[in-house]
Length: 281
Image (cartoon, rainbow, N blue to C red):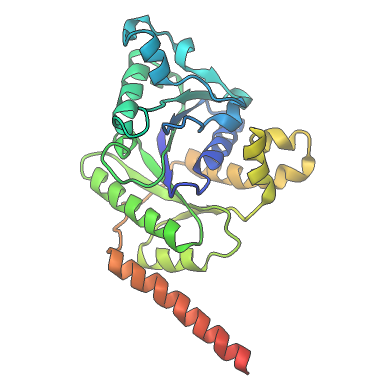
């Protein structure tokens, strides 16, 4: 099974992806996480370092694929989750999507894909071009990470459009959305009433999740030394269980931008008006 994780930049995709990968491994699955971001820090909390990228390795070998072995590009992370970082071109030059394609090509030539139960692509930010939509060409499921905010839901809507487009030619479904750092979910609920899609989990705003990223550790690793964090791991184990069950998934029909703007803006305005009326009583 191949899963692509998308969402607005800075929403916490990499931290979420790493914890999901460990949760899947705890459930007995052999997992490979592929970071698809030029800044190559997707797997940081799994390995505790910035591992060499596919592009680094290809350049060092003068792009002779036959000279590359799995151990040159695949690094072991926490709880036996294997890690790959695609890397990317220098800022302002080249296409990151091309790098993703080269990464998949190399891993296929190494027969690496055949070694894993689940391959998870952690993809840079919003889908704004065909290049960074490339992992959807290989995925069975997409997961969207969002929060209860206006901008993140707009990004989620654009990703939904990409899923619908790719589903025309690929066996791709949206497994569902994850509300991350979300103490409230009113806008998420409003959005999915307009664009129906499953909710896999709502992860609250928990300071230890942010701290885990800074420390370069997953919540699972931190919980080994702090049992009070085990309840946080249960959010990711719940997501893992749903993935393993191979959800039916959906092909979403995204909202038009202006319709979504009006939907969310009017919801905010109505809510503020009601609050003002309550305060005046």
